[in-house]
Image 1 (cartoon, rainbow, N blue to C red):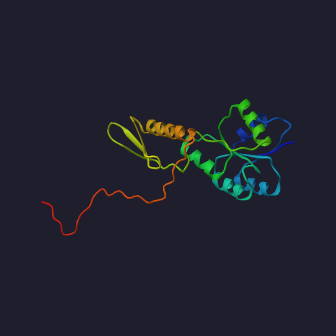
Image 2 (cartoon, rainbow, N blue to C red):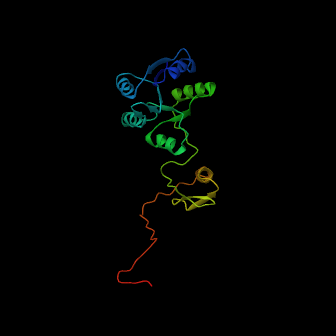
Image 3 (cartoon, rainbow, N blue to C red):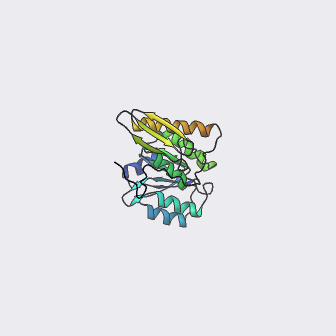
Length: 202
């Protein structure tokens, strides 16, 4: 019988999770991150499902604690989140989660994903760049510009979100083609203004 730990402070989602998962799963529900970590250390689970935001903070520290002790294959972690910020979610993958799921989940798809994750844990590949890709953005009266120094890519659009979406798509296509994102290892400095001591301007 698969043992699943669900960490969630919302009573509504606690009740829903009992309907999301098959009845033959051994489901443990806890309402805070510290209790979740204590239970993980003393019980054997096949899967951890956790909310992202809690009154005492976010789930990053819990994920770090789990990954310090268990690999993604030994103990998969799925984060349920209503946060739409793609770059914030990308940090969850960097921290070590196996997958993220938007709240509320599509129940049949969620059930299938959970069953597969328990049977053969894998790490979901996000469709957007991780922290390896640095992005700079600025705007003018007419457009927003996003620049990725790793790849020397520029994107321009009337709105900041559209420019970011276009950049994310360019990086996604780059990685899908099998190309790696170069790591910036040499500090770069741009000089915008220089004043020579002793020089006067008229």
